[in-house]
Length: 101
Picture 1 (tube, rainbow, N blue to C red):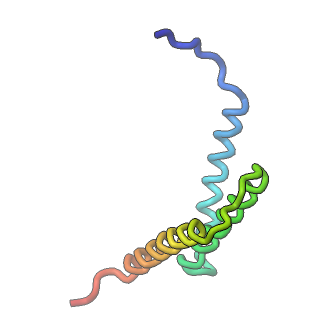
Picture 2 (cartoon, one colour; picture 1 turned 90 degrees about the horizontal axis):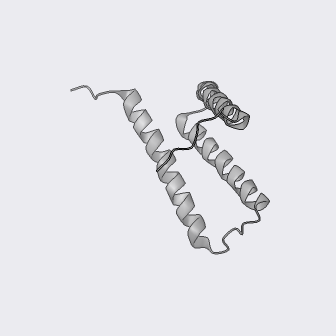
Picture 3 (cartoon, rainbow, N blue to C red; picture 1 turned 135 degrees about the vertical axis):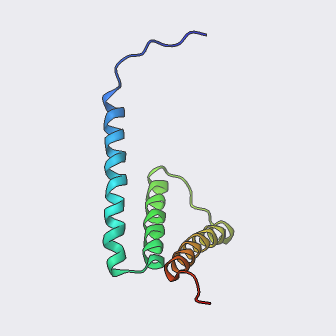
C-alpha cells in the first residue's frame, strides 16, 4: 500500500480551520455576555432554537422535505427539552453546592 505524496495544504483547508477556530472562540464570548442577562436554561433554549432555525433553512436550501407527521417533531422537541433541562438542572445544582448538614 503506497501513501500519496504529501503536498501543500490547500488554502480552503487553512481558511476552514481559521473560520472554525474563530467561530468556536466567539462562542465563549457570546455565552459570557448572554449569562449576564439571561439564565442558563434561557440561554440554552435560545441556542437550540437558533440551531433549529439554521437547520431548517439549510434543509430548505438543499430541497429536503420537512416531515409532515408529528412524531419526528415530537421526538426532536423531547430530546431538546431533556438536553436543555438537564443542563440547566445540573448547573443549578452545581451552583448551590452541598446542602448544609
